[in-house]
Amino acid sequence: MIKQRWVIKIGSALLTNNGKGLDKAAIASWVEQIVVLAQRDIEVILVSSGAIAEGMRRLGWNTRPDDIHQLQAAAAVGQMGLVQTYESLFAQHNMHTAQILLVHDDFINITQSNNVSATLNSLLTLGIVPIVNENDTVATEEISFGDNDTLAALVTNLANADQLVILTDQGGVYNTDPRKNKQAKLIDKIHVNAKTLEKVASRTAGSLGSGGMYTKVLAAKTASKSNTNTIIASGKEINILSRLGSGERLGTLIHC
Ligand code: GLU
Image (tube, rainbow, N blue to C red):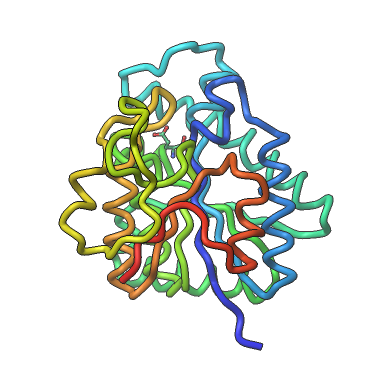
């Protein structure tokens, strides 16, 4: 049976229950669902933010600092908690995880990108779930803009993934900002080059991550370069990943 390969990105606001530390119950549920996907021959590369948010919690910082080096320090502290959490939760299902920290330059330098690709392939062949984050000590692209949305798209291209799934705290892409307009309607399906797509995507991010719908839409455009569709869906929807794995249509499908 030919395996499918998905890149799944989970953002900071979801992972940390809006700042109240890592939401272990929610993470345990996504882990269980990724185990179900693996049983259905879907290989998963998990792109996980949450390092800065968890670092802020560990350091007792209530507001996200503006200073980039403080954010980098928080990421270095929080990354420990993030990988510990994933490792212990996947271990309960007898699955190994691997930590991969990348910067955008790793996708430009041919030797480095070949190495990343080969490592990902080896890990997936071994049935291990790679957990990817930006190496925030080295680079600050995702801290400044994107909360790993761009990183997830670059991983999608490099790994030749069949699908990019971006889990967020909203139901998907709406025809207008749902935080400002209660009449906003969820877009079920839209072509990646549709003119309305960028217009409807809000550039406003939450206080815990630097993303927002705009960077998710840009990520879908990048993913389409390797002919990959993107689903933007709510991580709070019950069994979202396993239901997507069963072919259910949820969230917004941005297709090529
Ligand atoms: N790589 C960072 C993290 O995992 C980026 C997210 C952010 O901008 O808060 O925390």
